[in-house]
Image (cartoon, rainbow, N blue to C red; front, top):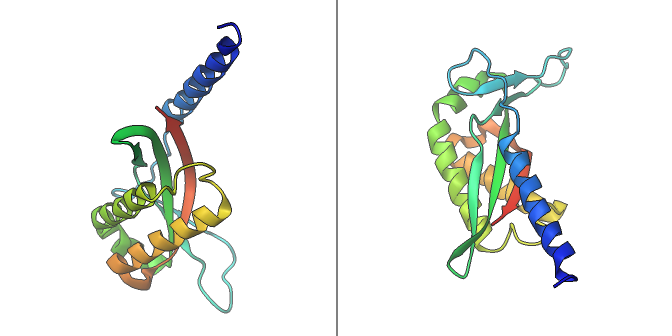
Amino acid sequence: MAKLLPIILLIVGAAIGGGAGIFLKPEPVACEEESCEVVAVEEEESNSEEEPSYIAMKNQFVVPVIRDELVKSLVVMSLSLETIPESVEYVFGREPKLRDTFLRVLFDHAYVGGFDGAFTESGRLAILRVALLEAAHSVVGKEVSDILITDIVRQEM
C-alpha cells in the first residue's frame, strides 16, 4: 500500500490540476459584435491580397471520449475561423450550423480514437483541422480559409 500511495497522489493531483485549469480559465473579452468576437488583423495593406479576419467561436466545444460505454475523459476545445473581412457577417449568421457541423466532426474524431494517447501530436491535429475545414466549407463555402485550434485540454474522468 505504501508503494501505491505516491501513484494515487500523482493521479489525483493531475486530475485536480486539470479541472482547475478548465474552471479557472478567464472568459474571453467580448467585442461589440452580436454573438462572436472578431479579431481583425490590422497591419499595413498588402498590395497583393487582403489581410484576413479571425472569428472566435463564442463557446468552447466539449467532446466526451467514450470507451466501453463509459465516459473516460472530456476534451474541451476553442476554435477560431480565418476569413476575409467581407465574409465576417455571412459566417456569423451561420454560426449555429457551423457549431453543429463541427461537433459532428469532433464526435467522430473522438469515436475513432483521435483524442486518445498523444492527442496533441501535430499529425493528429492536422487531420482534425482538415476535417473541420471541410465541414466549414460544406456550410459556408470557401469563405473560411483556415481553422485555428486556440485551446485544447483533455480531462480524465
